[in-house]
Length: 269
Picture (cartoon, rainbow, N blue to C red):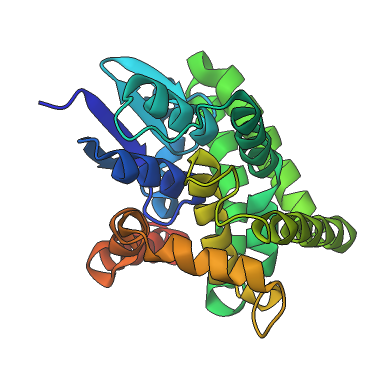
């Protein structure tokens, strides 16, 4: 019986990172899908597990681990088979820099601003609803006031940034700079930290895939950043990409989740 449980959402960027680690390492785990579209992550029972009310959350034999960057390191340290951390210290330091770079980047603001069409409408309506719901939950759960107050402030800042064209333009510009760094690095090697695939490649798989989802793949297509384009093709050819990302985005998985979310977001139930 597995001692690992993962609370996650199929289309969550950070959930994808952790599922990739689990797939690459061949670890068995128990799945708990938290539907972000119906705001299950904001329910008191989940906030007691993860005070920031985000996914993913890993529970390893009763120990709760939050933050995808911390979780993937935890998995690689505690399940040493198929090691994804370089042995050489300089390469480990390099890996850490690449992981920290993506972890600190405001991806959710970039994603929500760049979502177009109906997906953009749903995302922005959902964001507005979160503010009222968190405020309500804060009133109803005084024992969780600190957690909900922090979440409310976070959601307000998130909304403000997405609506601020200057801030989002700066975020988009910063991503362009990072993609240049990736291109330069990948001209030297197939992977980000030496000759072997590592946790750095794993987390960037999810980030680059998400940029494709919001139609920002023009940043490397048609001969622009060719080393990066070839790198993405290598990442997507790995079995873990299908297992951890594609299979979870299949209609049979996502359709009931999305339908439930649309009912909540537009009909209120």
